Image 1 (cartoon, rainbow, N blue to C red):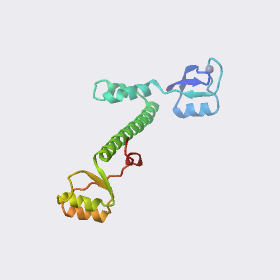
Image 2: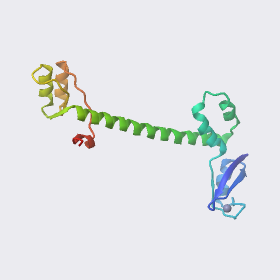
Image 3: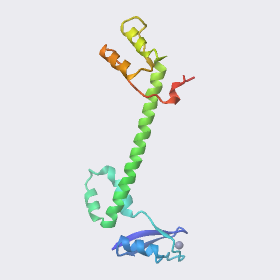
Image 4: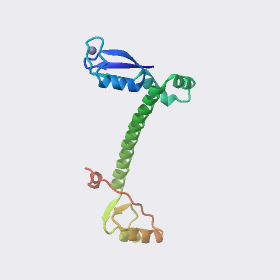
Length: 172
Ligand SMILES: [Zn+2]
């Protein structure tokens, strides 16, 4: 037995009892599920209570009680939980990506603010600084993979980092 919360287009929320999730889907498709208040057959399934509960309880997985709560859920709720955690993962991935991009932009801005752009003279300039022929400072510019390999062989630390266009222009 599957008990679900349903909602019609008028916003009436009511409970529906079905033999299975397939049963629910079939009855919805055949418009056999109707709102008891207004008779609307355009009903959608609301996230079940266990669905919401599982998501909010997820971060506290260590606390006792979560297991028994999970044990009470039946088949369809398991499916809900799967899709629910999927959404959560996607949201977390989005948040993480946004965070990484922010950190990356910060780092890129920091590099731009604290280095001198020497453009294609990068390899020569890095070598000059390394040998004390040029003032000690952070520089940035373009270098070919061959140039970078040569610099490393000479013991000169170089770092590759793609700089977003937004930070390449000096910030005023
Ligand atoms: Zn209704």
